Length: 81
Image 1 (cartoon, rainbow, N blue to C red):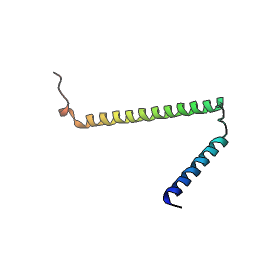
Image 2: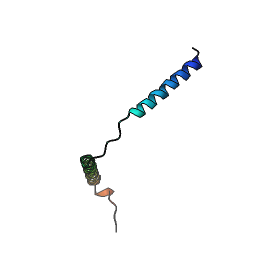
Image 3: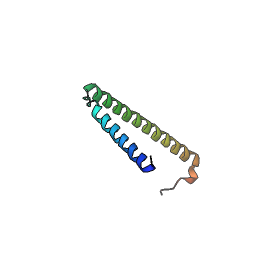
Image 4: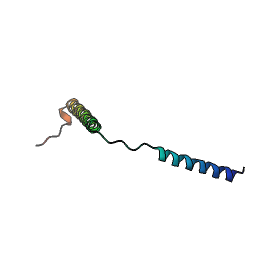
């Protein structure tokens, strides 16, 4: 069997296998209320966790900024007169 004939036979076998799998595929199952609830709870948990991390990062950055301003001393502060 030549290379071209082998490739054609392989492609044909793959096509037949794909068609057979599609024919045997189980019908899609319905989405239950429990699935929806679990998805929403997961999304809400992720949003709350992300917000908590954002607040913690923002507060830490604010503390770092305040500490650097305090350590800079009065001479580096602008005079607004």
